[in-house]
Amino acid sequence: MIKLPYDTGYLELPLDPGGRVHVLTAPSSGYRPEGRPEELVRQSLQNPVSSPPLSAMVAGKSHIVIISSDHTRPVPSRITVPLLLEEIKKGNPRAKITILVATGMHRPSTPEELTQKFGEEVLEQVTVKVHRSQEDEEMTFLGNLPSGGELWVNKLAVEADLLVAEGFIEPHFFAGFSGGRKSVLPGIASHKTVLYNHNARFIASPYARTGIMENNPIHEDMLWAAERAGLSFILNVVINSQKKIIHSVAGHPVEAHRQGCAFVHGQTAVKARPADIVISTNGGYPLDQNLYQSVKGMTAAEASAAPEAVIIMVSRCRDGLGGDHFFHLLADYPSPQAAMDRFLATAAGDTVPDQWQAQILARILLKHRVIVVTDPALAGTVRQMHMDYAPTLEEALQRARSMKGRDASITVIPDGIGVIVEQDGGKV
Image (cartoon, rainbow, N blue to C red; front, side, top):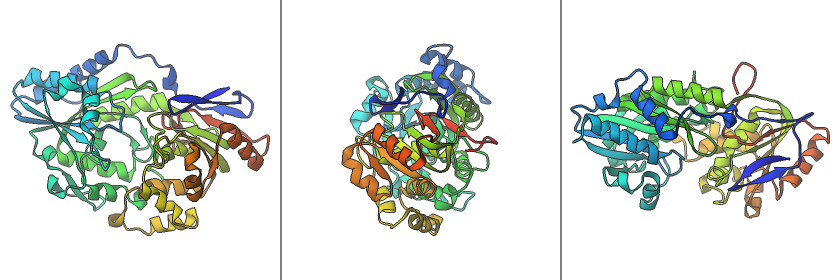
């Protein structure tokens, strides 16, 4: 039996590894860090990469802004933020400190979510502001990105005497990796800037893939945005499947992030095993909350799928679809090809919300049949979006075998967003 994360539990796949069945799991599943989470973070702050210590950088600064990820990201801010505050107060006990919550284009975090994320003790020490990407009056224009798009960033960050960011690094399905520069774009950028950065031409780039930053046009614009906004210091952690810190980097926004990404690559990169049937997940709750997010797990399957393979995506989707825009961008077209043609004909400045996710799903559907094992309430929605639905994993496997044969090769990826699936040459 192979256990696949599903919501807060597991589904059991009645297969055993071996023969024509292969399982791709990240090396980090057996990694044991040398120290407790707090110790790892402290060590990184005491030994910053290509940067003076934060305690030295804050000297003479009257207003310090810390960019922090929002409620949708499992960053252990109850550990990281208190240690950041400790460093700042060591060097400048009277500095005004504001936490700017990087929502990107997500909804604002609620007071309850902020308390859960930071803890009351932190909230009593700082001012907290939630980024609102649609509020133009809260943005400052910083020029044009290398790609030509306008860079609008939250003015709180731009007006700070020192801009710091905390976050985490994991594989990202079109930016290469999360963390670092992503705190600024999309984190605290205007919706106009985010939409331009996520345009169809960039998403279509062969370099806009998991684990790739070199020549990645999305990453390149993000780097420029972070530098232009004045991001000076980062604290980024790496977490395991239990959301526990196993590594931490701090210091220069580019160099520290690069070191963190190298660690993540070493802990998550696996070689593709191209197969006729590929089964993937989103790693269970909270990342399999909706169908929109589940596209991420599908890209791991795509990277290990033989031509015209069947992909089985296992995702609970307790919150349903994840966005009406996402649904209509595929369901309103007669085929994935028709939808793709529309995406590619859309100018960068005309990008609409969720277009990138729908484009990536269309890309997968143009090459593979997708069967989704999910909440029965989504059966009709899944079919309208040009995928198949199965109520159980067993039925999905039976249906896939009816298409590809009883002797079809099978690759199973228990955590599709926790691995970088590399083909020959190191590219997905």
